[in-house]
Length: 127
Image (cartoon, rainbow, N blue to C red; front, side, top):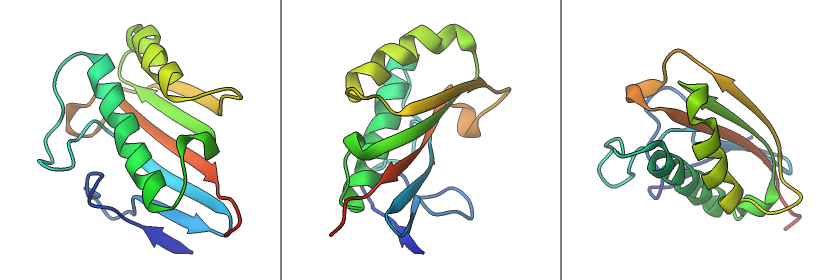
């Protein structure tokens, strides 16, 4: 196992890695809409939060030599399912067909008061 870390994504706010490479698989920890430069939560509507979450995931993928196109599974956590359509709109603009498998669940709270968190699993190409 190899930890993946980049200053281009927010530092872990607990005892976990931004991602772990295990063979040709990459397991990305959930990202919330923190700005990597300031460690502050991006404020605005849930679309802006989702865009920041995806930018953070993209930064970790790049650090591992991967892209969003190699993501095979995501899990989206929302504090309100009423945000589903807005999050889905931004998500759909980031991924291309064939889309990753996905689960979306509503949770009571997310770290730092975020409204959306996304974790991912990617398959890395042979190097």
